[in-house]
Amino acid sequence: MLLKNVQEWTLLLLIFGLIAAIGNWIGYSVFPLAALPGMAVLIVICLAGLILQHVLPVNIPSVAYIGIIGILVSMPVMPGSEYIVKWTENINILALATPILAYAGIAIGRSWTDFVKLGWRSIVVAMFVMVGTFLGSALIAEVVLRMQKII
Image (cartoon, rainbow, N blue to C red; front, side):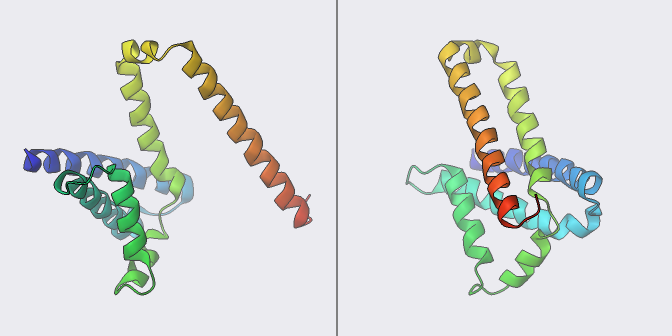
Protein backbone atom coordinates (compact mmCIF):
# COMPACT_ATOMS: atom_id res chain seq x y z
CA MET A 1 0.00 0.00 0.00
CA LEU A 2 2.81 2.42 0.88
CA LEU A 3 4.62 1.67 -2.38
CA LYS A 4 1.51 2.57 -4.38
CA ASN A 5 1.16 5.81 -2.40
CA VAL A 6 4.83 6.66 -2.97
CA GLN A 7 4.41 6.12 -6.70
CA GLU A 8 1.33 8.37 -6.78
CA TRP A 9 3.04 11.04 -4.68
CA THR A 10 6.12 10.94 -6.88
CA LEU A 11 4.04 11.37 -10.04
CA LEU A 12 2.05 14.21 -8.49
CA LEU A 13 5.18 15.96 -7.22
CA LEU A 14 6.86 15.60 -10.62
CA ILE A 15 3.83 17.19 -12.29
CA PHE A 16 3.84 20.02 -9.73
CA GLY A 17 7.58 20.43 -10.21
CA LEU A 18 7.23 20.65 -13.98
CA ILE A 19 4.44 23.21 -13.78
CA ALA A 20 6.36 25.22 -11.16
CA ALA A 21 9.53 25.14 -13.30
CA ILE A 22 7.57 26.46 -16.28
CA GLY A 23 5.99 29.16 -14.09
CA ASN A 24 9.41 30.03 -12.71
CA TRP A 25 10.73 30.35 -16.26
CA ILE A 26 7.85 32.46 -17.56
CA GLY A 27 7.38 34.64 -14.48
CA TYR A 28 10.92 35.00 -13.20
CA SER A 29 13.15 34.26 -16.21
CA VAL A 30 14.86 31.29 -14.57
CA PHE A 31 15.54 28.66 -17.22
CA PRO A 32 14.13 25.27 -16.13
CA LEU A 33 17.53 23.57 -16.32
CA ALA A 34 18.90 26.10 -13.83
CA ALA A 35 16.01 25.37 -11.47
CA LEU A 36 16.15 21.58 -11.94
CA PRO A 37 18.54 20.77 -9.04
CA GLY A 38 16.53 22.90 -6.62
CA MET A 39 13.24 21.46 -7.83
CA ALA A 40 14.63 17.94 -7.40
CA VAL A 41 15.69 18.77 -3.83
CA LEU A 42 12.25 20.15 -3.01
CA ILE A 43 10.54 17.09 -4.50
CA VAL A 44 12.75 14.73 -2.48
CA ILE A 45 12.08 16.71 0.72
CA CYS A 46 8.33 16.59 0.10
CA LEU A 47 8.43 12.89 -0.67
CA ALA A 48 10.45 12.18 2.48
CA GLY A 49 7.95 14.13 4.59
CA LEU A 50 5.00 12.26 3.09
CA ILE A 51 6.69 8.92 3.72
CA LEU A 52 7.62 9.83 7.31
CA GLN A 53 4.02 10.81 8.03
CA HIS A 54 2.86 7.33 7.05
CA VAL A 55 5.75 5.37 8.59
CA LEU A 56 6.08 7.02 12.00
CA PRO A 57 3.41 6.19 14.60
CA VAL A 58 3.08 9.83 15.72
CA ASN A 59 0.03 11.57 14.25
CA ILE A 60 1.67 14.70 12.83
CA PRO A 61 0.66 16.21 9.45
CA SER A 62 3.07 15.62 6.59
CA VAL A 63 3.53 19.36 6.09
CA ALA A 64 5.20 19.51 9.52
CA TYR A 65 7.62 16.74 8.55
CA ILE A 66 8.32 18.48 5.23
CA GLY A 67 9.04 21.76 7.02
CA ILE A 68 11.29 20.10 9.59
CA ILE A 69 13.25 18.22 6.93
CA GLY A 70 13.60 21.38 4.85
CA ILE A 71 14.90 23.33 7.83
CA LEU A 72 17.31 20.58 8.86
CA VAL A 73 18.88 20.06 5.43
CA SER A 74 19.35 23.80 4.90
CA MET A 75 20.96 24.53 8.26
CA PRO A 76 24.57 25.74 7.91
CA VAL A 77 25.85 22.96 10.21
CA MET A 78 24.54 20.24 7.89
CA PRO A 79 26.96 18.89 5.28
CA GLY A 80 25.93 19.95 1.78
CA SER A 81 23.54 22.64 2.99
CA GLU A 82 25.32 25.31 0.96
CA TYR A 83 24.50 23.37 -2.22
CA ILE A 84 20.86 22.93 -1.24
CA VAL A 85 20.49 26.63 -0.48
CA LYS A 86 22.27 27.57 -3.72
CA TRP A 87 20.10 25.24 -5.82
CA THR A 88 16.80 26.30 -4.25
CA GLU A 89 17.63 30.01 -4.59
CA ASN A 90 16.66 29.72 -8.26
CA ILE A 91 13.06 28.84 -7.42
CA ASN A 92 10.57 31.58 -6.61
CA ILE A 93 7.96 30.76 -3.97
CA LEU A 94 5.12 32.10 -6.11
CA ALA A 95 6.06 29.71 -8.90
CA LEU A 96 5.57 26.88 -6.39
CA ALA A 97 2.29 28.22 -5.03
CA THR A 98 0.56 28.49 -8.40
CA PRO A 99 0.16 24.77 -9.20
CA ILE A 100 -0.69 23.93 -5.59
CA LEU A 101 -3.44 26.55 -5.45
CA ALA A 102 -4.74 25.44 -8.83
CA TYR A 103 -4.93 21.86 -7.56
CA ALA A 104 -6.76 23.03 -4.43
CA GLY A 105 -9.22 24.96 -6.58
CA ILE A 106 -9.87 21.92 -8.75
CA ALA A 107 -10.33 19.74 -5.67
CA ILE A 108 -12.87 22.17 -4.20
CA GLY A 109 -14.60 22.53 -7.56
CA ARG A 110 -15.04 18.77 -7.85
CA SER A 111 -16.68 18.50 -4.44
CA TRP A 112 -19.15 21.34 -4.31
CA THR A 113 -21.39 19.23 -2.06
CA ASP A 114 -18.65 19.18 0.60
CA PHE A 115 -18.10 22.90 0.10
CA VAL A 116 -21.83 23.60 0.51
CA LYS A 117 -21.85 21.59 3.76
CA LEU A 118 -19.41 24.11 5.25
CA GLY A 119 -22.20 26.66 5.18
CA TRP A 120 -22.37 30.37 4.63
CA ARG A 121 -20.48 31.14 7.84
CA SER A 122 -17.28 29.64 6.46
CA ILE A 123 -17.57 31.82 3.36
CA VAL A 124 -17.92 34.93 5.56
CA VAL A 125 -14.91 33.86 7.64
CA ALA A 126 -12.87 33.20 4.48
CA MET A 127 -13.74 36.65 3.13
CA PHE A 128 -12.67 38.31 6.40
CA VAL A 129 -9.43 36.33 6.38
CA MET A 130 -8.64 37.37 2.80
CA VAL A 131 -9.52 41.05 3.41
CA GLY A 132 -7.58 41.06 6.69
CA THR A 133 -4.55 39.49 5.05
CA PHE A 134 -4.66 42.00 2.21
CA LEU A 135 -5.06 45.00 4.52
CA GLY A 136 -2.37 43.71 6.90
CA SER A 137 0.05 43.21 4.01
CA ALA A 138 -0.73 46.65 2.63
CA LEU A 139 -0.19 48.23 6.06
CA ILE A 140 3.15 46.47 6.56
CA ALA A 141 4.28 47.47 3.06
CA GLU A 142 3.24 51.07 3.69
CA VAL A 143 5.17 51.25 6.97
CA VAL A 144 8.30 49.61 5.56
CA LEU A 145 8.31 51.75 2.43
CA ARG A 146 7.86 54.93 4.48
CA MET A 147 10.66 53.89 6.84
CA GLN A 148 12.94 53.41 3.85
CA LYS A 149 11.77 56.77 2.45
CA ILE A 150 10.76 55.15 -0.83
CA ILE A 151 7.30 56.77 -0.63
